[in-house]
Amino acid sequence: MALTPLLWLLCFQGDSAAHLERGTLSLRLPCPFMQEQVLLENLKSGLTTTFEYRVTVQQGGKARMTGAILEVRYELWDEVFLLRRLKLDGTGDELQFKDIAALTAWFHQVQIFQLSDPITANDLLVEVQLRIIPFSEKEQAETLKWVNQGVGAPGTRNNVSQPGNRVFTMIMGNSIRRETLLEYQWRLLSGASL
View 1 (cartoon, helix red, strand yellow):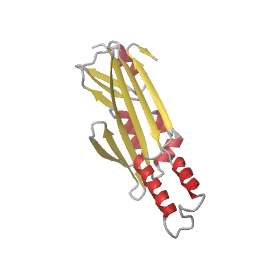
View 2 (cartoon, helix red, strand yellow):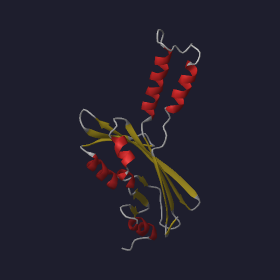
View 3 (tube, helix red, strand yellow):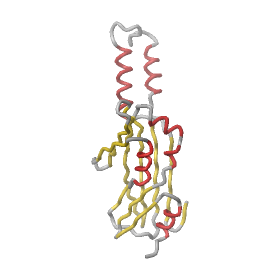
View 4 (tube, one colour):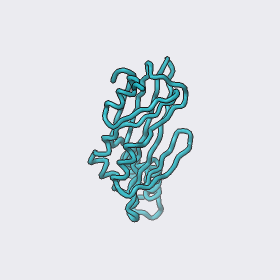
């Protein structure tokens, strides 16, 4: 059985892989991000590192979108990595890894997405965006709540009703944004790379 141009292209790019069987496309991507020092440091920070995948598949004038959110947290007391995978349909699962090597091995083999709508390898464009964010939405919300409660608590040195404290609250609120730590994009076209 010969590989289609899309499958050949993906296999040729190193450790990425695609599988197209009976119209179902599964895609695994290379994970050079697991070698980035800034990411490795963030993974061991005790905060939840968030991986946001957005996938768009275009074929025959139709675009289909899917994605997933992976949240990785290093549990300092247990010295394990906990991974929570959330899909767009609301389902998810949780996994545990003993060290960074096991987590990296999982990223190398994980199936990013699977579309079951009929797909052929002809005129197929797959675009994948990955944003890696240094903490989760939940951690951001909890931090903002903590800052706002602490600043406004009666008897504290800097009560929110005092002049100038609103500026502090605004500065803190703006600084606790979920800036992107790393970002990757892949564009794969059947028969060619863009």
